[in-house]
Length: 167
Image (cartoon, rainbow, N blue to C red; front, top):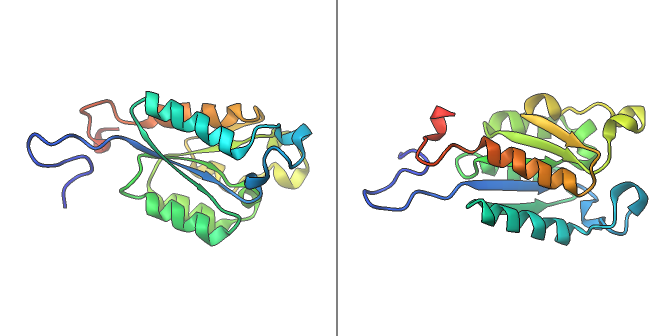
């Protein structure tokens, strides 16, 4: 099997790809507790991320699900297909060993993001099962958390001409 991005002589190299995963209840952004999560809708956040990824020469795939198994499937599907993951696991941040295990098995650099500052909230929200497996965590900046997470993911991409193994 050829390495990612490898192809026939003269063929174009594969564009870098980033997977953005939104967990449960994030489809309600803009209407669910705007004082905590802001007024930006998920569609607006995704449009901003797509525009930024495009300007950086990267492809962006977005997944939102309220179902743990669908999120796990998306993470597992990232292996060999995406170069980085930006993930807001929502409530699964604090409870999902299965999602944690999927991130570990995927072997793809992941950035955890949260709209609110989970470390300043209820004690049960201060512990992330996901963070120890991520390159980093960004929390508390509202919709900007996603943009900062995307910038961190873009920084994980190999330089043009560099193989993923050289990272």
